[in-house]
Image (cartoon, rainbow, N blue to C red):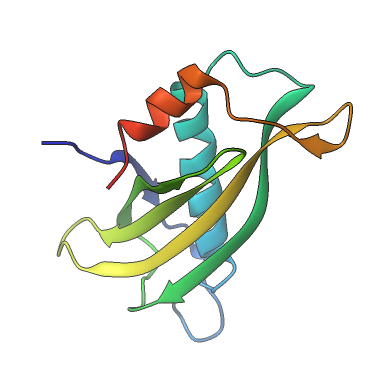
Length: 133
C-alpha cells in the first residue's frame, strides 16, 4: 500500500495568536516545510534555473491546534499534468490522529531564466506518480 510523505512539526508558542491557538498563517509554514522536504527527496536534480514554483494554495481549517503539540504533515499527489501538479497536505494531530487542516497546492515546473512554465521531466513525473492517490 502506498503511504504519503510525512514530516513532524512541533508547534512553538510564537506560532499561536491571541486566541491561544495556532495562527492561521502558521499552517502555511508547516505546509511549506513539508513541501520543500518532499521536493528535495522527490527530485534532487533540480537546480536554480529550473525548479518548482507555487502557483496557488488553498487551506481548509478543520480543528484548532495549540503550542506544545506535535503535528504530522502528510503529503500526497492528487493530480499530475503536463507542466503542473497538485499536492495535498494533511495536517494531523500526532496524539489523536484527527485532521487539523488540509491544503491543496498547485505547483508548476518553471524555468526561472526564461520566466515560463516547462514540461515536467519524465523522472519527476514517475516519482510524483508514486504518491498519486
